[in-house]
Image 1: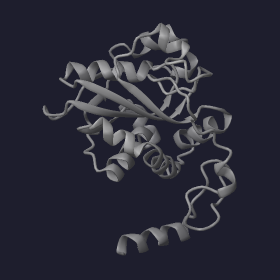
Image 2: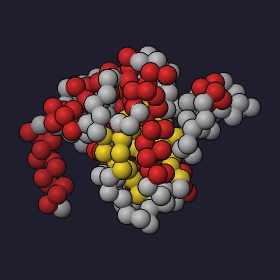
Image 3: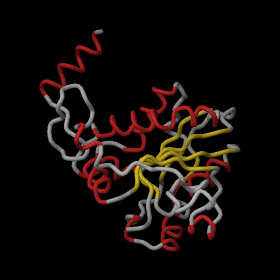
Image 4: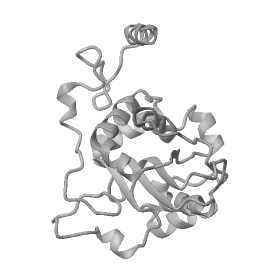
Length: 239
């Protein structure tokens, strides 16, 4: 009761803003404007059985990218197509400190994929880390906040220090697939993860070529993890 009252007080002083239009959310208490929810391009079936991108037909098992590149992770689940609307929202989170938008995205991921995630039987939720210098400037890691939502809502332990990012890489959006792989080489190293963790739910904000999830999967498997499943807010072709 006290926590709910505190939350209401914060919302009155600092009204919640919509992750799509950026305006104060109406009605009060919602996480997104009802009229803006329809502007988000939710992932619809059929999808690639590996990365979660939409495919043209249910007779197609894998998208073009996944037929050309083998991935070490089992499967990725994504909430949205990475279009212009989603891109603006993700950029606002990272560069305009709109971390409150992650409350909506975290809730939406759990509502859409909670039962599927439970069937993966993950032993822990692990966020993709950002470099310490970037986190210091930004003040937070968006993947960690999203992972916390999933961990809390689905009652799965979170291990925020399982992976560490020791290499400050160039922005992935500026690189082609081969450059992305080189960019991430040796960027991630093992952190702290209990030895009994064998199945991991790896959380990030955006999936394009899968290079980041792939690099993190390799490190996690070197630590004794057997299966890695991904969850991202967005999925889409390279910009």
